[in-house]
Amino acid sequence: MHHHGKGVLRLTWEIFNIIGTIAFAISGAIVAMEEEYDILGVYILGLATAFGGGAIRNLLIGVPVSALWDQGLLFLLAIIIITLVFSFPLGALKHWKRWGTFTDAIGLSAFAIQGSLYATSMNHPISAIIIAALLTGSGGGVIRDLLAGRKPALLTGDIYGVWAMLAGLAIGLGFINETWGLYLVFVAVILLRMLTVQYNWHLPYRSLKEDRSSSFSQNSGM
Image 1: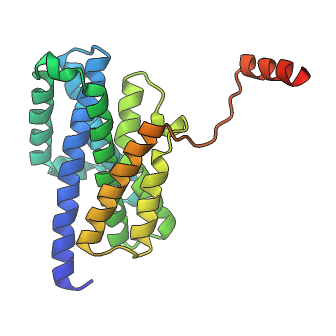
Image 2: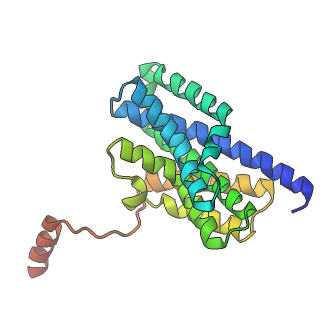
Image 3: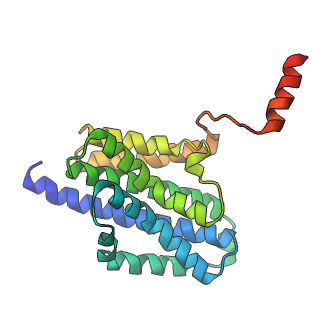
């Protein structure tokens, strides 16, 4: 990439970082309110969701985790956003489920791309780039789910981790290095994530719960 490209990429990277942070701050705050956490819980969950993915990514690809503290403006932004969510009129909160899913999709997509770009710029191998995409995109959500006492959607067969990894693959292999291409991937991952929810696409999973297997053996005995 020539020098001009680096500047544009840096800006794109920052934009995705801001989009992802806002989206996940909203998503975390919504989940906290669904779980009826108090206002401190709402802030903690919002911030943990917004910055958790980045922290995990930094650990993995060798950026000091303390690099998070350089993001003072983003912290401020996240706090303002969470405050807005918390003080929102309750009538509007009825659609939170949908908004929660949508902001989650935006955060996933923005951070997956951002993590991929980050790892690519550090010349990591393709496996590292795919994992950076997955963990940056979904790390915040996993932390949010754990703090909310929920099973992380990433691990229970929700297919969205696959979209993040595919984005990482495309960026890591250099198929996409134009800015417009990145925005295209951004929109594509959001759409795929929303379709996943809409049509309830799942990765295959096997249950080890007794009742299912016993009813299965009874049925097969018929």
